[in-house]
Length: 252
Image 1 (cartoon, helix red, strand yellow):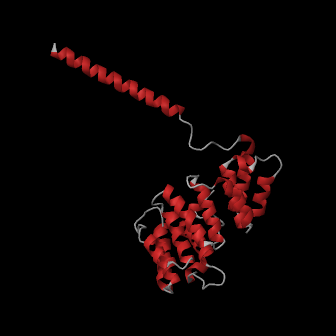
Image 2 (image 1 turned 135 degrees about the vertical axis):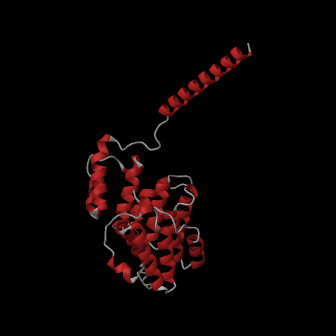
Image 3 (image 1 turned 180 degrees about the vertical axis):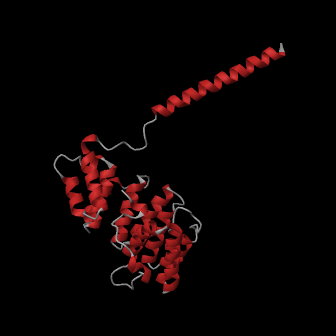
């Protein structure tokens, strides 16, 4: 009798597990994707603009998004972000801000917050950039690319203590991300320790390869070579290959 009762109990548990697994599968299948795909009638315009943007053809990219028949900018976050970044590259900062402004909330999409932060950094509004990088970091704690951009923004604001504090939280042995070395290089360069800065960038190049390092180096040069200030570019930086690739933390 006890054996039969045990067998029945085991069978009921197995049946319950199978039923629960099936229910979870159905629920997962009904869950909508995190981000809706680009509408079919806008795919070609968006991708054409994206290709032009990555190739540095910023006016052509803007023309593609503004072409007759293209989906309205306000209808898709991908398009909003891309257009704001194109306008930023064209130094049409006010237009870029107007494109992003309706979607900026403390709990809004992190990509929108990053686009605004990068825009403000390019405008040399370092405190404004810090605000939006912090919002993005709150949504994605510990992200090394966001932390690196925070280091840059605090250096721009001459707040080296905060920059060093943020940099100290980055990991030197991160196998996928060289932010630690670029943060160190930026701080060293801003305190006239140019040899240390050059050494850090060379270490990044050795560990992560030329392609990754040059992408980060391009951003390093763009945001830290402020007009009217001592250049933060190292001798090694002058050999960087311009790629027109957006920063790792700032891709549309």
